[in-house]
Amino acid sequence: MKFSLLNAGRTAIGLIATLAASATFAQGEYPNRPVRFIVNAAAGGAADTTARILTTALSQRLGQPFIVENKPGGAGVIGLDVIAKAEPDGYTIGGANLSTFVVAALAAKRLPYRAIDDFTPIAKQWTQPNLLGVTPSLPISNVNDLVSYAKSHPGEMFYGSTGTGTSLHVVTELFRSKAGVQITHVPYKSAPAAESDLAAGQIQMMISNFTSMEPQVRAGRIRALAITGPNRSPLLPNVPTIAEAGFPAVEMVTWGGVVGPARMPPAIVQKLNAEINAILADPKIMKQHENLGATVASGTPAQFADLIKADASKWGAVIKAGHISID
Image 1 (spheres, rainbow, N blue to C red):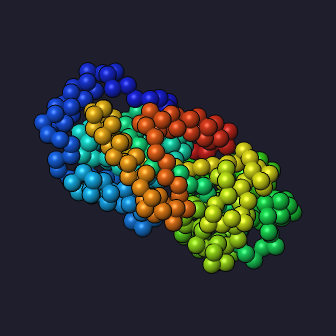
Image 2 (cartoon, rainbow, N blue to C red; image 1 turned 90 degrees about the vertical axis):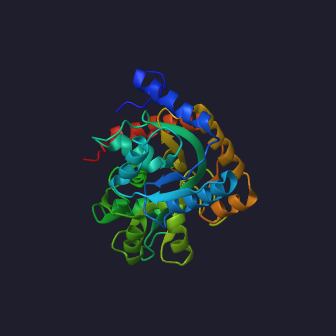
């Protein structure tokens, strides 16, 4: 699968669509009607919660409703397909994250859209590390203990993920490879479902979303061994980074942002980017993200596009080396 930055003028059809959308923008100040915001995940999770924080603020600032529509399923493909096939007029935009927008797309054999090329990067919103946790019943207190235990119990350990080809699957396979251990993958439909089995001892380890796992760690149901970001979290200051634990190559910082369909008018993209960056600079908004274990992350559309391209290269190599694919 080829990842490249979109080229708005590469076809006559694209040029016509851009001109038409630009004409719509010129007819009235954007937005002059409600905007659909597609979330490619179920309500209640981190993707949904961060989207609602942002859309509430956008509605207040721009005077039109930004309406969240949850379109879960297909490892995020269903929701992203809605965005990709929408009119590029700025009235259908949505969330994208590392797992569904980049990693799952790289692992997929077939997609109903062209990954990256059929989208317009608008703004980065947040970053967040993952947590490596184990079931508390095991005699494991750090990552070295985990590696030693796995090597002395080959084939007896199982790890959970949010599905084959997702970022949590890919990063755990990278850890397993670097550690040289045999731990069997068990895919689940959601992080909470996997974490429930982890707490109960049905599986032995998992690298999961910080937002989802952190409350389980504080409650004592899961023992956290490492955080996959470059820095420790103030919410769990005693949990070392994965680099401190001896595995710097396993570092993963997931991110979320806003995208639209390809060929959106640059004026609309720039307006949305400026408004989102202004929202993210609000201390109240920062705190709402921090409460989820995330950090606000602003920037230009070009910087967001560069991040997407860099992560596609990094994790594409891991997926290829691990022969990971989604049928």
